Length: 448
Image: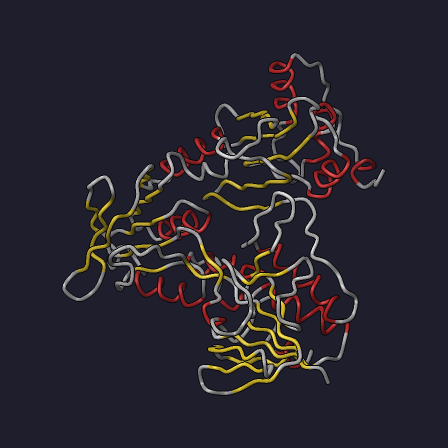
């Protein structure tokens, strides 16, 4: 019986395992040193905030794995011997494989800051990071102040977590506005305001220079490049993540930032594949990055690779870009491409509408000459994925998007609707005369 071994039990590895099992009777072994069972990484913050228990983050009952003949090994792979098709664990145990799937995810970035390995300094990625945070910052008596370094999605999550326990937070962001390498300026400016309104000490255009130790080896303060010393008990390093592939040294598997793969997620070694955060496409797909540390792309890679493993060779084809996140209590969605001012193309034009009082806004990107719809960001308004995906595929123009914008709204019944205001603003900016159409369920559920 062919033996499939998967290193990593995150969304990528587990999706591959589940779909291989649906399609075959192959022997499947999943190795992870992080946890016994798969859990939802994106839900870790809610465990700390008291909204969930850790077991609630596990989507499958513990009996699921044995019933579906998915063998689980709690261990750390220290070496991959591709010549003999075997793995050597830290415990010295050896596991043979016929096909190997590397799905080891990411680890928090460290950039050589003095003091970065002190006690009280940590990232926020793994289950162990969550447990460490619970020990380092159980309350505001133990953690007098936390300093977060890095202004991405993990940073804002960590800030929200700490504030839920009334721990004072200073947020060091190297950019001149929060996440302005990703968000257009109107959205970034709104998030700056929102962070400050949540009593988070936001320091923009500020870099970490050094973490200072106390006499017991614990972090006691940070020094910024502005010369400021900020006393603190915990330092959260959230300046992005990098593929977790150090154990592959000497394996012969080609790596760059991540494990190099083609569109079929194959490495340079026969019968070895990589998926999820740790995989790096030789050739980036469209405007996507070669490494995509995103939950849904990991799931899609797992599904595609399972087909290939089971004899139905399938390329990884993620379709139109989309993502969602939460900035404190503002929900964010993006579909297609809406680039920041730092990276948008010459032909990309933005239409931006913001609510005069609430933290609600929409930015739509379109081609300035053809008016083709390129992408949309929404904050505080939920959108229907299928509709926006369809409009991107059909290359609809802005007039069409504005006219039928109500079809894309996915907010629950009785929520305030803003499409009339959005269209009115568009008309005034572009001297248009578009009338907003009433939502039509027939159009929504039609493929025409």
